[in-house]
Length: 304
Image (cartoon, rainbow, N blue to C red; front, side):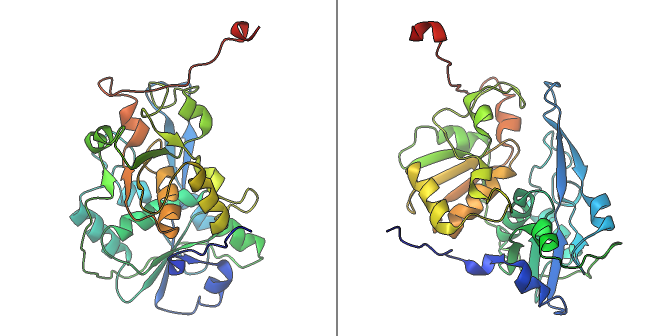
């Protein structure tokens, strides 16, 4: 009989039912983190167009929620890549201006995909602020339960917290390259399997970081509700890839978004030695000095 696993940090995940009963609590601040990607696979120079979720937020959001503009407020807009993390001082000031800080409990959600939520969660977490949770199932689960939405736009007064940045979570291409074929380190790709195999050139050169293994982010979500998979099932997926609590896991994807979901679930399962390659394949695939690996197709003529 399979052992039933529980999340190591249950306070980092809240349910819609839990939040609904606390909407009147002034110490809870809610942020809609929705962002949309429109893939442009026909354009070899640009993997996708980014659209803010602000318009949809104004048309309907969880009561009291403010909007979190990931690209505009929480990314380095001077970077050639869409979601590069800004310097820690800028990041902390922008979060504080949005209303993140003591004594508030920050609740994050998104409409379309939980990885936008986990990206913002990690950005807050690495600054040392711990009273932050994701809303399991996001807006779709809130609506499925029949809970009310409100329209318009909200904002919070600025707040403060003592920033104590961790510079070891988000890493660059040098750290990633040095980690290839490193003992007790698994480089984990959160992209879909076709991208991992090298069947799609969305980010430039098709393929993956050599030696990396693949757990597409969507495999960690319930298919119909997009809530996080039961922790026992999630742990079984990672164990199939030989990932244990003591393993160092360097997570990557296309642009540092989906990888944050894999890293979030891993932390919830007790894996603490986690890294996220920030610019991921958006950077790696375009740098011809970096190695790349594809899965070679077996010719059907060789099978006869």
